[in-house]
Image 1 (tube, rainbow, N blue to C red):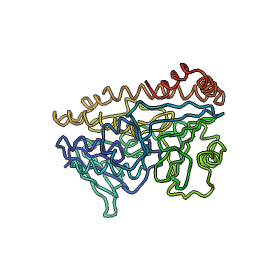
Image 2: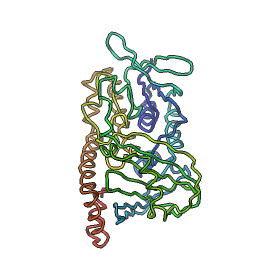
Image 3: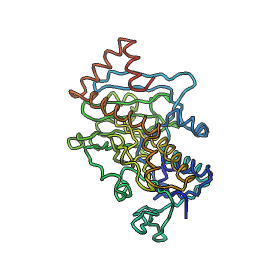
Image 4: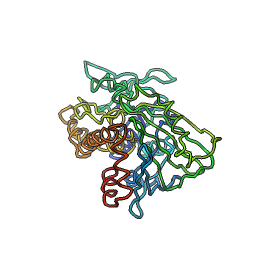
Length: 376
């Protein structure tokens, strides 16, 4: 019997497991495949680096600048304050890094275990049933935390939310390439399309970089992400940074991301909480989710600790998760992102073009726009 069983050992699940294990609780961490690399740009914010200073030991670039392009390639560039930087990580390496810290803190990893259902006794969900090469296993716990991604079957079976629809999602594709390029090691590039689409070029160091794109919402019915990726990588403005025609593809992958923020009422029920991508903690503009996922896991761990101390696992106490200051702030941020996204793409990207064009010649307006995108 475990105090907490967590399904999913990505950033949300691993961080939540770490916090709980450090508090002295018995934590089971379920992962279907620790060798799986999530299709993702791999942007790791400065706040995550503050939370995990061990990241500084990884061989990843220090990102101090970000450049955003409108569909007609007007641009704005943000420079971080001195000494402040984010980084770009290979998700396989980064997720392993966080997971290992959780294990070192005392969490018990169940690798190659796919969560298939809940263990139910007397109409109460008391554990998570997994399937592994060794057969079916039941992992029981006082609190169950769902952290196994947007396509989580547990989220649906818990009755917390329905299966998410394509029109509410970002469909993303990305690849890691190796070869000589013109990307500056401290600068990430982000490109907006005329329709609800975007692309990125992120340096990884050692002559590697992450290239990818996403299509947002109902435009997934009008465009195919594979076609968009081919168009994006061959665009002359993008080719300025990646001029070779013979890059080595190290890895490629695609995945959906929920793009409408979190539904606060869907985050918990009796003895169950939901965090990370499975709950919608990802930016509706860019799909970025590491920062949001980690801090959702942090909030859930805090509430779980109080629940365990009181030996009360009811929804009445777990509802503190949805009203946690971190969760409320992230939910508010996502609502703002949805509104901003819909404005950016209005009139085939005309609004964003106008904003960036004006920002190129008006320094005060440029600062205002940068603050809107990145925060002050």
